[in-house]
Each structure stands twice: as structure tokens, then as C-alpha cells.
Length: 249
Image (cartoon, rainbow, N blue to C red; front, side):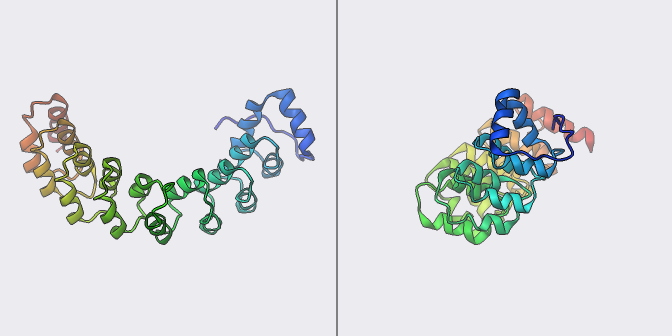
């Protein structure tokens, strides 16, 4: 991150002073300050109380903000700020859990994506049937329970199935079923999944869709049989990937 100059040893600023400084220096400068890992916590605390929600969001995304400040921001009136707290990798799971009942769209999406959202909460979100629940996002979360993934891999929406097929927590049985999906995007996701075994990649190496074969050729689990099968593929990108594989062997 770019670090603006913040040389003062003490920041005795109130909201009015911050507003004056924003007007004098410009919001972009203060956004960089709020975003910088080198900004003193004392100054982040001041910016976290700014009337400008953009500054509060920037502080909420800063991994050096600290638990106390992130906890304060988790109660902010602006849903963008609360969503930023959830998205911050430094936010403790307990703080995120306090937002489980938040029904605003941005927070729900952040919870669906967060690696600190509990498997039980992810299951609850899917089972709620709420229209706001981003099923495709939950489908790609590695903490989503396998039984929930089993339901999502059969979802009518191909985008949900594609994201589920990319999830490395899928069992071989679910990957095998998804490899026969009518949607080539789902099959491509299976072919790219690092959990897909070599024997299934061999099957997908014969797929008529070139993007599926390209994914097979780039999968680290590709076996010698699948590699041989693709060595003379009609697609140059597939052949190049296989040639590079053989050169590295």
C-alpha cells in the first residue's frame, strides 16, 4: 500500500476537524491514509468516526484496524461498512457471528463469501430459501458442508452448479456426477478442480468442448493416459499445455 505522510505523534482530532481536513486536502488522500497498513491505530480510530462512509469503509477493510475498532464498525449504520468488516480477513469469527442476523444485501453476500462464516450458518442460509441468499457464492465457499454442496451441484441455475463444481471439498462421487452435466461450464469447472482424480480427467479429456479439455490439460492431477490422449489435440492451447508438461517431466 502507498503510505501517505502521517508524522504527527498524536492525533487530537474531532469530526469537524476531519471534515475540514477532507475539504482542504481531498478525500482521496484520506482514503489512502485509512487504507494504509502503516497508519497509526489512533488515527484510524479518528477516521472510523468520520461522517463520510467511504472513510469508514476504508478503515473497516484495513487489516491493522484491530479487534476493538472492527467491533465498533460492525455496528455502523451503513451496511457497506458492516460488510467491509465481514470481508476483512483480520476480523475475528466472533465479531462476524454477531452479524449473522443482519438482513441487508451487502452483509449477506459478505457472509456467504467469508471463510470465517461457520458451516452451520452457511447451511442455514441455503436452507432459508431467502431470495437474497447468493447461492453461487456459498457454492464456492470451502467451508460449505458437503451435503449442502450436494444440493447445490444439482441446482437448476447453471452458474450455481459451476461454482459448486469448482469447490475442492466435493467428493469424487459428486465430481463424477457433475462431469456428466449438460452445461459445459460445469464440466469445465470439474476439469479444473484440484480434487478431480486422474481417471475422471481421462474421461473429460474426450469432451467435445475445447474449454473443458484445456482445463484438463492444466490440471495438476492429469495422468499419463489423459496427457497422451491430449498430446495431439486439435486445439493448440491444449497441445502447448501438454507439451510443457512432458518437457517438465
